[in-house]
Image (tube, rainbow, N blue to C red; front, side, top):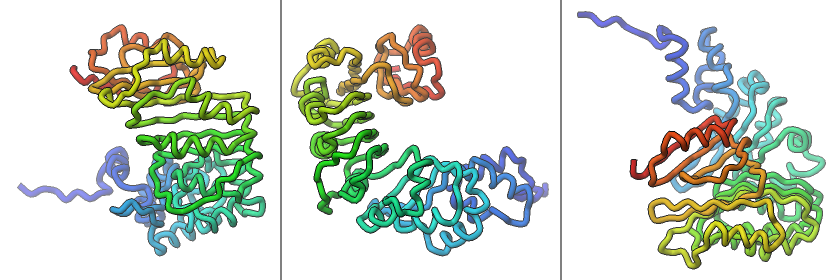
Length: 360
Protein backbone atom coordinates (compact mmCIF):
# COMPACT_ATOMS: atom_id res chain seq x y z
CA UNK A 1 0.00 0.00 0.00
CA UNK A 2 1.44 3.37 -1.03
CA UNK A 3 1.95 5.83 1.82
CA UNK A 4 0.93 9.44 0.97
CA UNK A 5 3.63 12.13 1.13
CA UNK A 6 2.95 14.59 3.96
CA UNK A 7 4.82 17.90 4.11
CA UNK A 8 5.24 20.18 7.09
CA UNK A 9 2.58 22.55 5.78
CA UNK A 10 0.02 19.75 5.62
CA UNK A 11 -0.02 19.70 9.42
CA UNK A 12 -2.50 21.71 11.45
CA UNK A 13 -1.47 24.96 13.16
CA UNK A 14 -1.66 23.23 16.54
CA UNK A 15 0.75 20.48 15.48
CA UNK A 16 3.08 22.97 13.82
CA UNK A 17 3.24 25.02 17.02
CA UNK A 18 4.05 21.95 19.09
CA UNK A 19 6.93 21.11 16.73
CA UNK A 20 8.29 24.66 16.51
CA UNK A 21 8.17 25.16 20.29
CA UNK A 22 10.64 22.28 20.62
CA UNK A 23 13.18 24.49 18.82
CA UNK A 24 15.05 27.53 20.08
CA UNK A 25 13.18 30.77 19.40
CA UNK A 26 16.25 32.26 17.74
CA UNK A 27 16.46 29.37 15.26
CA UNK A 28 12.75 29.58 14.46
CA UNK A 29 12.86 33.32 13.79
CA UNK A 30 16.09 33.17 11.78
CA UNK A 31 14.88 30.30 9.59
CA UNK A 32 11.20 31.06 9.10
CA UNK A 33 10.44 34.75 9.58
CA UNK A 34 9.49 36.34 6.22
CA UNK A 35 9.59 33.09 4.29
CA UNK A 36 7.25 33.06 1.33
CA UNK A 37 4.36 31.54 3.26
CA UNK A 38 1.77 33.67 5.02
CA UNK A 39 0.69 30.90 7.37
CA UNK A 40 4.22 30.25 8.70
CA UNK A 41 4.83 33.98 8.97
CA UNK A 42 1.75 34.43 11.11
CA UNK A 43 2.74 31.59 13.43
CA UNK A 44 6.34 32.76 13.84
CA UNK A 45 5.26 36.36 14.56
CA UNK A 46 3.29 35.07 17.56
CA UNK A 47 4.26 35.82 21.15
CA UNK A 48 5.39 32.23 21.73
CA UNK A 49 8.50 32.95 19.64
CA UNK A 50 8.97 36.68 20.13
CA UNK A 51 8.46 37.38 23.87
CA UNK A 52 11.91 36.06 24.87
CA UNK A 53 14.97 35.92 22.61
CA UNK A 54 18.30 34.42 23.62
CA UNK A 55 21.38 35.70 21.76
CA UNK A 56 24.04 33.73 23.67
CA UNK A 57 25.62 30.29 23.47
CA UNK A 58 27.18 28.36 26.36
CA UNK A 59 30.22 26.23 25.64
CA UNK A 60 31.05 22.89 27.28
CA UNK A 61 33.41 24.83 29.59
CA UNK A 62 30.54 27.15 30.63
CA UNK A 63 31.92 30.14 28.74
CA UNK A 64 29.18 32.40 27.38
CA UNK A 65 29.52 33.67 23.81
CA UNK A 66 27.37 35.71 21.48
CA UNK A 67 25.74 33.96 18.53
CA UNK A 68 27.53 34.10 15.15
CA UNK A 69 27.91 37.54 13.54
CA UNK A 70 26.13 36.48 10.37
CA UNK A 71 23.04 35.46 12.34
CA UNK A 72 23.24 38.58 14.50
CA UNK A 73 23.40 40.76 11.36
CA UNK A 74 20.21 39.20 10.07
CA UNK A 75 18.43 39.79 13.36
CA UNK A 76 19.54 43.41 13.72
CA UNK A 77 18.76 44.36 10.12
CA UNK A 78 15.67 42.37 9.23
CA UNK A 79 14.09 40.62 12.22
CA UNK A 80 14.20 42.69 15.42
CA UNK A 81 12.66 45.87 13.89
CA UNK A 82 9.62 43.78 12.86
CA UNK A 83 9.00 42.04 16.20
CA UNK A 84 10.33 44.51 18.80
CA UNK A 85 6.83 45.35 20.05
CA UNK A 86 6.39 41.77 21.31
CA UNK A 87 9.81 41.42 22.94
CA UNK A 88 9.70 41.43 26.74
CA UNK A 89 12.98 39.68 27.57
CA UNK A 90 16.45 39.61 25.97
CA UNK A 91 19.44 37.44 26.86
CA UNK A 92 22.64 39.14 25.69
CA UNK A 93 26.40 38.87 25.76
CA UNK A 94 27.52 42.34 26.77
CA UNK A 95 29.80 42.97 23.76
CA UNK A 96 26.83 42.62 21.40
CA UNK A 97 24.42 44.52 23.64
CA UNK A 98 24.83 47.89 21.92
CA UNK A 99 24.32 46.46 18.46
CA UNK A 100 21.13 44.65 19.46
CA UNK A 101 19.56 47.38 21.59
CA UNK A 102 20.14 50.04 18.93
CA UNK A 103 18.52 47.97 16.18
CA UNK A 104 14.93 48.50 17.42
CA UNK A 105 12.80 50.43 19.95
CA UNK A 106 11.62 47.59 22.26
CA UNK A 107 8.69 49.47 23.86
CA UNK A 108 7.71 46.47 26.03
CA UNK A 109 11.16 45.24 27.06
CA UNK A 110 11.19 44.74 30.85
CA UNK A 111 13.78 42.00 31.47
CA UNK A 112 17.44 41.93 30.46
CA UNK A 113 19.92 39.12 31.14
CA UNK A 114 23.57 40.15 30.63
CA UNK A 115 26.72 38.05 30.53
CA UNK A 116 30.40 39.05 30.62
CA UNK A 117 29.99 42.57 31.99
CA UNK A 118 33.38 44.29 32.17
CA UNK A 119 34.84 47.74 32.87
CA UNK A 120 34.41 48.89 29.27
CA UNK A 121 30.74 47.93 29.19
CA UNK A 122 30.03 49.57 32.54
CA UNK A 123 31.81 52.84 31.71
CA UNK A 124 30.14 53.16 28.29
CA UNK A 125 26.62 51.88 28.81
CA UNK A 126 25.71 52.34 32.47
CA UNK A 127 26.10 56.11 32.67
CA UNK A 128 23.82 59.13 32.27
CA UNK A 129 25.24 59.67 28.76
CA UNK A 130 24.39 56.14 27.63
CA UNK A 131 22.00 55.79 24.66
CA UNK A 132 20.26 53.12 26.76
CA UNK A 133 19.60 55.37 29.73
CA UNK A 134 15.84 55.45 29.05
CA UNK A 135 15.60 51.68 28.76
CA UNK A 136 17.51 51.08 31.99
CA UNK A 137 15.73 53.78 34.00
CA UNK A 138 12.16 53.51 32.72
CA UNK A 139 11.67 49.98 31.37
CA UNK A 140 13.94 47.32 32.82
CA UNK A 141 12.33 45.84 35.92
CA UNK A 142 14.54 42.72 36.07
CA UNK A 143 18.28 42.93 35.36
CA UNK A 144 19.67 39.40 35.62
CA UNK A 145 23.42 39.00 36.10
CA UNK A 146 26.02 36.57 37.30
CA UNK A 147 27.46 37.55 40.66
CA UNK A 148 30.79 38.65 39.25
CA UNK A 149 28.97 40.88 36.76
CA UNK A 150 27.00 42.40 39.63
CA UNK A 151 30.25 43.23 41.43
CA UNK A 152 31.62 44.76 38.21
CA UNK A 153 28.61 47.07 37.95
CA UNK A 154 29.20 48.24 41.51
CA UNK A 155 32.91 48.85 40.96
CA UNK A 156 32.70 52.61 41.45
CA UNK A 157 31.38 53.35 37.95
CA UNK A 158 27.82 53.73 39.22
CA UNK A 159 28.41 55.80 42.32
CA UNK A 160 25.22 57.75 41.63
CA UNK A 161 23.14 54.55 41.60
CA UNK A 162 20.48 54.58 44.33
CA UNK A 163 18.25 51.65 43.30
CA UNK A 164 19.50 48.29 42.09
CA UNK A 165 17.39 45.17 41.51
CA UNK A 166 19.35 42.08 40.51
CA UNK A 167 18.49 38.43 39.93
CA UNK A 168 21.43 36.01 40.02
CA UNK A 169 21.03 32.31 39.36
CA UNK A 170 24.23 31.22 41.13
CA UNK A 171 27.04 33.14 42.79
CA UNK A 172 29.72 30.60 41.87
CA UNK A 173 31.59 32.66 39.28
CA UNK A 174 35.31 33.06 38.87
CA UNK A 175 36.58 35.89 41.06
CA UNK A 176 39.97 36.23 39.40
CA UNK A 177 39.27 39.91 38.68
CA UNK A 178 39.89 42.32 41.54
CA UNK A 179 37.20 44.96 41.88
CA UNK A 180 36.87 48.16 43.84
CA UNK A 181 35.15 47.25 47.14
CA UNK A 182 34.58 50.78 48.49
CA UNK A 183 31.35 51.68 50.26
CA UNK A 184 28.24 52.56 48.23
CA UNK A 185 26.86 55.51 50.21
CA UNK A 186 24.34 56.57 47.53
CA UNK A 187 22.64 53.18 47.37
CA UNK A 188 19.21 53.59 48.97
CA UNK A 189 17.25 50.59 47.66
CA UNK A 190 18.66 47.15 46.85
CA UNK A 191 16.94 43.90 45.90
CA UNK A 192 18.83 40.63 45.45
CA UNK A 193 17.57 37.25 44.30
CA UNK A 194 20.26 34.56 44.18
CA UNK A 195 21.29 30.97 44.88
CA UNK A 196 24.41 30.37 46.95
CA UNK A 197 26.40 27.19 47.49
CA UNK A 198 28.32 26.22 50.65
CA UNK A 199 29.76 29.43 52.20
CA UNK A 200 29.11 31.84 49.32
CA UNK A 201 26.41 33.68 51.25
CA UNK A 202 29.01 34.52 53.92
CA UNK A 203 31.95 35.26 51.61
CA UNK A 204 30.21 37.06 48.73
CA UNK A 205 26.71 38.26 49.56
CA UNK A 206 27.37 39.63 53.04
CA UNK A 207 30.47 41.67 52.05
CA UNK A 208 28.46 43.23 49.22
CA UNK A 209 25.60 44.20 51.53
CA UNK A 210 27.93 45.73 54.12
CA UNK A 211 29.11 48.25 51.51
CA UNK A 212 25.61 49.81 51.42
CA UNK A 213 26.00 51.87 54.57
CA UNK A 214 23.11 54.28 53.81
CA UNK A 215 20.65 51.69 52.54
CA UNK A 216 17.00 52.39 53.37
CA UNK A 217 15.19 49.50 51.69
CA UNK A 218 16.48 45.93 51.33
CA UNK A 219 14.81 42.91 49.69
CA UNK A 220 16.51 39.50 49.81
CA UNK A 221 15.28 36.28 48.21
CA UNK A 222 18.17 33.89 48.80
CA UNK A 223 18.60 30.13 48.58
CA UNK A 224 21.54 28.62 50.46
CA UNK A 225 22.66 25.08 49.62
CA UNK A 226 25.10 22.86 51.52
CA UNK A 227 25.56 25.01 54.60
CA UNK A 228 26.27 23.54 58.05
CA UNK A 229 24.04 25.94 59.98
CA UNK A 230 20.79 27.87 59.59
CA UNK A 231 20.44 31.59 59.04
CA UNK A 232 18.55 33.12 61.99
CA UNK A 233 17.73 36.49 63.48
CA UNK A 234 20.97 36.75 65.42
CA UNK A 235 23.05 36.15 62.31
CA UNK A 236 21.02 38.62 60.24
CA UNK A 237 21.33 41.28 62.92
CA UNK A 238 25.07 40.84 63.47
CA UNK A 239 26.05 40.42 59.82
CA UNK A 240 23.61 42.77 58.04
CA UNK A 241 21.40 45.04 60.14
CA UNK A 242 24.08 46.57 62.36
CA UNK A 243 25.86 47.72 59.19
CA UNK A 244 22.74 49.52 57.90
CA UNK A 245 21.70 52.15 60.46
CA UNK A 246 19.37 53.90 57.97
CA UNK A 247 17.43 50.75 57.01
CA UNK A 248 13.68 51.25 57.43
CA UNK A 249 12.24 48.46 55.22
CA UNK A 250 13.51 44.88 55.14
CA UNK A 251 11.68 42.21 53.12
CA UNK A 252 13.25 38.77 52.97
CA UNK A 253 12.92 35.07 52.31
CA UNK A 254 16.04 33.01 53.02
CA UNK A 255 15.92 29.27 52.41
CA UNK A 256 18.80 27.20 53.79
CA UNK A 257 19.41 23.52 53.04
CA UNK A 258 21.63 21.57 55.44
CA UNK A 259 22.51 17.89 55.41
CA UNK A 260 21.56 16.46 58.79
CA UNK A 261 24.96 14.82 59.19
CA UNK A 262 26.63 18.22 58.74
CA UNK A 263 24.27 20.22 60.98
CA UNK A 264 26.40 21.82 63.70
CA UNK A 265 23.58 23.16 65.86
CA UNK A 266 20.00 21.94 66.01
CA UNK A 267 17.26 24.54 66.45
CA UNK A 268 13.48 24.24 66.43
CA UNK A 269 11.01 26.59 64.74
CA UNK A 270 10.47 28.27 68.09
CA UNK A 271 14.21 28.67 68.72
CA UNK A 272 14.71 30.41 65.38
CA UNK A 273 11.59 32.53 65.79
CA UNK A 274 12.89 33.66 69.19
CA UNK A 275 16.12 34.98 67.63
CA UNK A 276 14.02 37.46 65.64
CA UNK A 277 11.93 38.48 68.64
CA UNK A 278 15.19 39.19 70.46
CA UNK A 279 16.15 41.80 67.85
CA UNK A 280 12.69 43.36 67.71
CA UNK A 281 11.41 41.67 64.54
CA UNK A 282 7.96 40.26 65.32
CA UNK A 283 6.52 39.88 61.80
CA UNK A 284 8.71 36.92 60.83
CA UNK A 285 7.91 33.25 60.24
CA UNK A 286 10.08 30.14 60.29
CA UNK A 287 9.31 26.78 58.63
CA UNK A 288 11.48 23.65 58.95
CA UNK A 289 11.07 20.71 56.55
CA UNK A 290 12.93 17.41 57.01
CA UNK A 291 13.36 15.39 53.78
CA UNK A 292 15.68 12.47 52.93
CA UNK A 293 18.69 13.27 55.10
CA UNK A 294 18.32 17.03 54.80
CA UNK A 295 16.58 19.80 56.67
CA UNK A 296 15.39 22.93 54.89
CA UNK A 297 14.86 26.08 56.92
CA UNK A 298 12.72 28.93 55.59
CA UNK A 299 12.75 32.30 57.32
CA UNK A 300 10.68 35.10 55.85
CA UNK A 301 9.17 38.45 56.67
CA UNK A 302 5.40 38.83 56.87
CA UNK A 303 3.38 39.22 54.79
CA UNK A 304 5.14 36.85 52.39
CA UNK A 305 6.18 39.02 49.45
CA UNK A 306 7.50 36.66 46.76
CA UNK A 307 5.90 34.81 43.87
CA UNK A 308 7.80 31.52 44.34
CA UNK A 309 7.98 29.21 47.35
CA UNK A 310 9.76 25.87 47.20
CA UNK A 311 10.58 22.89 49.39
CA UNK A 312 7.83 23.16 51.95
CA UNK A 313 6.28 19.97 53.32
CA UNK A 314 3.04 18.74 54.86
CA UNK A 315 3.20 21.35 57.58
CA UNK A 316 3.12 25.05 56.80
CA UNK A 317 1.73 27.97 58.83
CA UNK A 318 -1.86 29.17 58.27
CA UNK A 319 -0.88 32.57 56.85
CA UNK A 320 -1.66 34.46 53.67
CA UNK A 321 0.48 33.33 50.71
CA UNK A 322 -1.60 35.18 48.13
CA UNK A 323 1.52 36.56 46.39
CA UNK A 324 2.76 33.06 45.55
CA UNK A 325 2.19 31.98 41.93
CA UNK A 326 4.49 28.93 41.88
CA UNK A 327 4.77 26.36 44.69
CA UNK A 328 6.95 23.24 45.07
CA UNK A 329 6.07 20.83 47.90
CA UNK A 330 8.38 18.01 48.97
CA UNK A 331 7.85 15.49 51.77
CA UNK A 332 8.32 11.85 52.69
CA UNK A 333 4.86 11.78 54.29
CA UNK A 334 2.03 11.27 51.76
CA UNK A 335 0.01 14.35 50.90
CA UNK A 336 -3.64 13.84 51.86
CA UNK A 337 -6.77 15.45 50.41
CA UNK A 338 -7.00 17.88 53.33
CA UNK A 339 -3.53 19.19 52.50
CA UNK A 340 -4.63 20.37 49.06
CA UNK A 341 -7.70 22.02 50.58
CA UNK A 342 -5.28 24.03 52.77
CA UNK A 343 -3.19 24.85 49.70
CA UNK A 344 -6.27 26.20 47.91
CA UNK A 345 -7.17 28.29 50.97
CA UNK A 346 -3.81 29.87 51.77
CA UNK A 347 -2.43 30.06 48.19
CA UNK A 348 -5.50 31.48 46.41
CA UNK A 349 -3.66 32.84 43.34
CA UNK A 350 -1.44 29.80 42.72
CA UNK A 351 -0.79 29.00 39.04
CA UNK A 352 1.81 26.21 39.19
CA UNK A 353 2.05 23.39 41.75
CA UNK A 354 4.80 20.75 41.80
CA UNK A 355 4.39 17.81 44.18
CA UNK A 356 7.16 15.36 45.11
CA UNK A 357 6.37 12.61 47.61
CA UNK A 358 9.55 10.65 48.29
CA UNK A 359 7.76 7.59 49.68
CA UNK A 360 4.50 7.65 47.78
